[in-house]
Image (tube, rainbow, N blue to C red; front, side):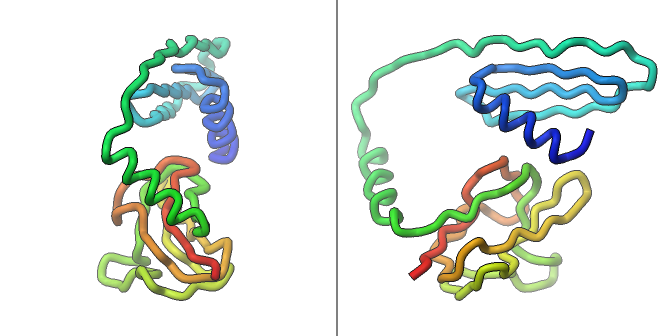
Length: 165
């Protein structure tokens, strides 16, 4: 199974609202678990050739509704959201490990305040021992780096805020 197929499966599971999906094929076993308290998890295991296929099993995710009074941190977050409304988020196209630098002893690709053009490399994400350059989708100035160096990132997770003006 190719990385692109796994990514599409993860997107599908996230949209479906299922809490767990298991897929077993001839040579691959994939389990995707989602939960409100923990980040999305994906487990891919190689199976010995000749194992029988089993159907995908979905378990519905329990719905929980709670009402809470907005806290001061929630209000502060809303103010930050409105102030960053004119910024463009550069999001991760894959799951992997985020690196700001091309190597341990090298300078970061970009810093806060850096001017970038469309197509400039902003960071690298390592997925399955492959290093993928993540390029800017817009021209502008880097306003904020949203992820720490050498940390795991999820699909569609915001990585940078860019001011396109």
